[in-house]
Length: 106
Image (cartoon, rainbow, N blue to C red):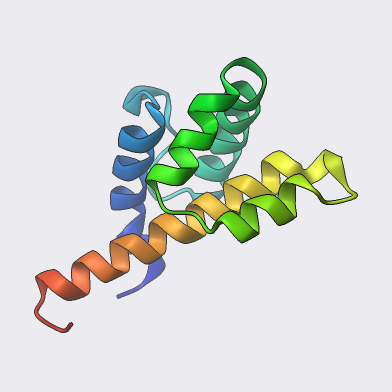
């Protein structure tokens, strides 16, 4: 299974977990575009509804240790990008695990 096959599921999960409008998301095979869109959403949520942002992170089961490390880092300018990467990494792991269960490999 290659990464490109996972992108449609990634877009679906981001839509669901972060209330991203599907029509505003980039093409499902464009990880760079998906990441850029997610960075904008992270910035928006962190500035306008921080509690919802934290709840979303909890819902997708992102490691609290990793979240804390990002929030307390010295380089504050890359926080949204690092969160976007962390979210994408976690969502792809969830998708792969779900696919393995579905295929009876776990």
